[in-house]
Image (cartoon, rainbow, N blue to C red; front, side):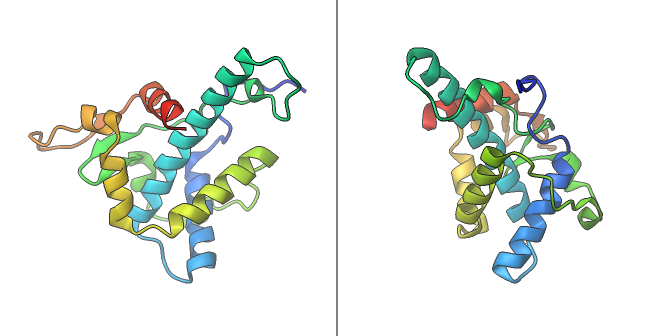
Length: 171
């Protein structure tokens, strides 16, 4: 069955955030900080987009039999506004949700490749300190381009295409 690759892989980013929060509590046995929640959301988006885009580019160059047809997947893990804040990229709509737990759905990850990707990357990100994640995000060209330290409000949008383009060169 052919998927609609213009539709994000995950319908609701708030449900993904609730999933991340729940998984973090289970694995780490403590509450997740707002910072620790925001960075995995961003890195999941960035690395997924880079991974899929790079896979599509590689497949177009190679006609051998393939295990995964990356063309069946959207480059967008989810659709949400990402802004350049002081401590790195933030999804303001998720940041402003007061009771994230009410959005929890155990089956938010329905696709095998997506589930494997998210669980693997979260396992790595959970082990990294909050401020190390900030340092990593601050190294991103897209964040640097859209963050202006002279502004009193730090809410410049980071274009998703630019994020995916940058990460497709990192993978």
